[in-house]
Amino acid sequence: MKKTIAIDMDGVLADVETHFLNWYESDYGKRFTKTDLIGKSEEDAFPKAGVIKKFAATPNFFSTVPVMEGAEKAIAALQQHFEVYIVSAAMEFPQSLREKYYWLEANFPDIHWKNIIFCGDKSIVNTDYMIDDHIKNLDYFKGKTLLFTAFHNVTVTHHTRANNWKEVLTFFEKEI
Image (cartoon, rainbow, N blue to C red; front, side):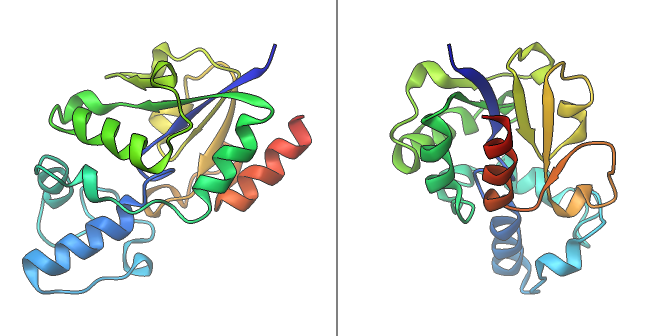
């Protein structure tokens, strides 16, 4: 039986950082880079308070997020050795459910609908591994964790870190 991996969407499969930056520039006329965000919380990432939650609650935000570089090939490679589940705490933004489902269908067509989990709290997830960019999802996870680097987690040191999908694959090569 294959071991199981839970993989987060936003910030892991979906490049929401780039998307937030592009939407901010479009709405407010000011360009920021990923470097400008490093070390900031999501609440303090931009001068306009609450803008990340505002964008995330806007229709079509999630349906237009770019795919994280290397994610498609990495998922295909992982599926050869592991049962892959996509897990998203999507309930905070209910309009995102349909958008995220269709985004996955368009960008990761080999992920079966039975392997997509939309929830409010990831503490219910019971896989062998979890890849996520938020420590709130990893800290209470019972399996092995892999922290996917994002601007808001650069100071975290208590989880194994992957900076990109190439490093994720290197980690799992050792686990096979």
